[in-house]
Image 1 (spheres, rainbow, N blue to C red):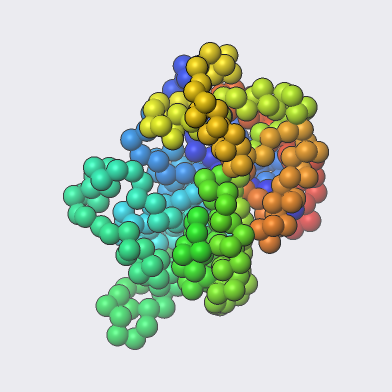
Image 2: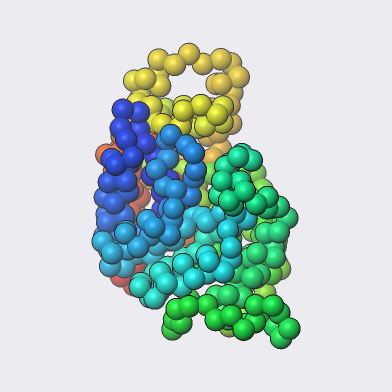
Length: 338
């Protein structure tokens, strides 16, 4: 099975953006060496705890430091932008790094109304425009608008021999249908909503329309993972992520607290219940335990690729988690065989 990484560049309490981005650089280089398939960086705005705001800026920085792994966006907030500009950005990335670029897009508004207006320079955009924008994005990438379309004569530059692979990031059958009808890959966000993945992916596979660019469907699912030498150690490390998720949901500081600080925070019965519920978004344990659970998840989601996200306080714990995953799944041998 293939494993990939989603990195939001989380900032730990007592740290800063510079250190978070340095950790992203370190992890990307290690992931390239360990045999992970792809490395996606996120887009988040007006948050104190996540450093990744612009995937199209971060991707070439990381790709230059590596040799093999694919880089992509997880994902560009398409409703806030011009499909034409997004297409040109990622075709340029593909020209710079042929065969290594993924364009992941999502329907998320990216924040509250004020943030959305700031992103669009005061122009109110409606999320219901996403299907049209996705179709136009593919039209610009493929340069194949139908006769009579207003944009048919536009040639998206630069001209490239290969195209970035487009993926739709989604949480529902609606998003899955958008991906299927536009011949893109589909990523299900299990780490956000773990309850509709099987239905969404089944919908995608049923409705997928092959194209010259993408003759076969492509599916992966993203899940929080914490892997350590023992289950006890993994559970200890997971406390910082548990409290981070709780804080994010409450709209509080999104910096990741230390294990010691997390243990000191008083929790209500509702908090404890929510932490237990959030564990459905997460796989935690020893290498063998994690491997078993991820294989079960991949089987349920009809995919041979799981995307992993790990937001814990100590970067060394995070790095070791990925190293253990690469070892137990023998990723180097998998990547060498491709």
